[in-house]
Length: 428
Image: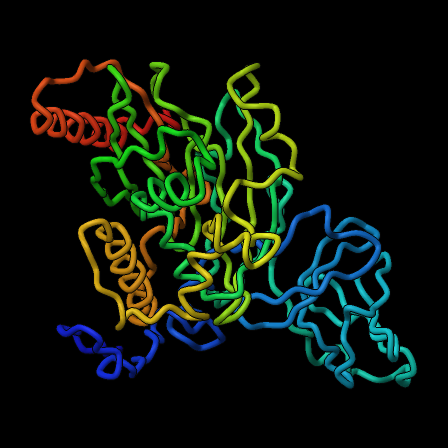
């Protein structure tokens, strides 16, 4: 269990506040056999982009495991343990051929499923290759991303198809992949912290999205069948802009358009991006993006389909001083320490969504420990999974009484959220 630091009640009291509590290992440790690691492994996880599989093997590290991913000359992709089971040479130096990959050291050949096809130099009558397999994980490709299932083979779920991935009038394209040197949870839970956009992304660093993100929203949070949403409702002139970003358990974020300004009335609009927050190990994390692009001209800015362009504020500044002057998510999240220490936090009203997500994650971890399927895991191969990310702008004249208007803004957001949960706009 984690412990908390003392609640400091005196000026110049740093001497009384020096001890740093332990991290919450139930969340932070992701290696084989750890509670959180086993929870995350129950879901299909992105490993790399499909176009990274070229003529050479591609080395990856996920959940603390060293792996190699490749596409053989027949087009089959495989994900294998990095080190050859013969003498331990790395398969990242292997030779890709028609049926799999060969170790550079002695030519042992492995198929995508771990079958050992050849052991050059062994006697013709040898049965060694038929008596064991090399470690391998099942993979699937979707939207230009390679996904793997790294959990227990007898609990493998069907590959999930979310309604936002197959939305009419939209296409999905691969986006960026990048890395943060910190634990996965402090990145993932950021999506349930809408208040930071009004300060970090607007007041501190200038409007990296639109100026209207600087309006502090009225906040609500709702659980969904697959995770949770925040409901951030703002007054923009005579309109109310309701923004609903989404955390899909265990580690998928869906976020609405960052070019929204709330000035033009429009109904439900789904995500501009789906991105997975994948632990490399306990203190390093990989982002993989899938971008949503409307096929209707003018709905999605042309720059969003340019894969080389990143979401503002997500990458480290070019130099330390630039990061101090214009910090973004990278600086705010990485600077929480390699693993954020929850025992040092002083939680406030704006952190309700973060705490709610932690509760959901802990439930999932403990469900797996108890032998159950965690929330968010779909075992119906024919299902299209409903998601709830949304931006909407409604014409709603303001009340002259600020207190009554704040209540109107909050009730409008609540009504929209409840309607979306009931009507499932993307699935519909």
